[in-house]
Amino acid sequence: MDIKKLFGFEGKTVVITGAASGMAKSAAELLISLGAKVYGIDINQITLPIEHAYYADLGEKENIDAIVNDLPEKIDALFLCHGIAAFPGNELKVQKVNFYGQKYMAEKLLDRISDQGSVTFISSVGGFGWESIYQEAVELINLPTWEEAMKWYQEHPDKIQNSYVFAKQCLLSYVTYRCMDPMYMNRKIRINAINPGDTITGLTKDFNKSTSPTGNEKEGEEMISNIFLKSWNGYAAQPEEMGYPLVVIGSDICSYVSGQLIYIDYGLTSNWKSMALLNKNEKSIMEISEESQK
Image 1 (tube, rainbow, N blue to C red):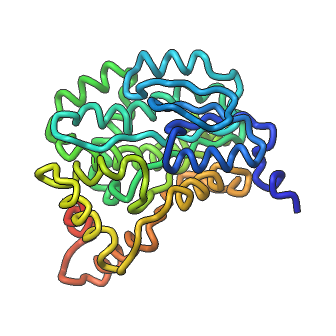
Image 2 (cartoon, rainbow, N blue to C red):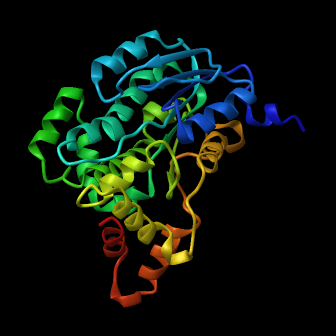
């Protein structure tokens, strides 16, 4: 069996954001080896041998519009992988980079994505419990313009106080809400998201600092370990352990997979659900989710 044909990327045009490092870089390397024509986007330097590298802040509408206008007219697969950590004062920025800019970019490019193409996001286990904000997310998703979305954020400061979690929950809500929307379904464009557990990337230090209430990197590292690793004596994933599955999900191998929120966390969130379903300590899934994100 020809592996390249099985994946279906050979000679195909692929766009991937966040390609300078981490999971997206690992994904881009695999895509290149599978014969894809890769167009990468990042705010940092991309060192891979791709067709074209774009540099932009993907939290700004003008930057997204400029890149969208310059990308190829036909795109076979879109991978939206960029993101930032949350720090006090950057709540709106996190929404724009980690969710709304991704929604906006996907829908701006949708007419160019091939029939039976794919759109695949990197979200996070931080979005676990997305059902609790689904109504608000759908309200935000259905706003027709970027400007109206920014106004919504300004009018709902309480919703974005836990900014990283809310953005990731909105992204998972988007996949669930849009997967059978005519804009995707009429052309059988698949839409999925992976939810990585603790993974070592170029953002690890930022995540450690942002997790600590005092901004202390070591304290944040210990807190993340307690949430994601301690319960199973686990270890952090390497970027390729997320990037490779990402490519598989966006490939022809998963041609019948759409609307899925795929947790790649060594079973952690399944364990959270199990504890809730067994009514351990009489805690619900939502309560366990909220505790894990403190």
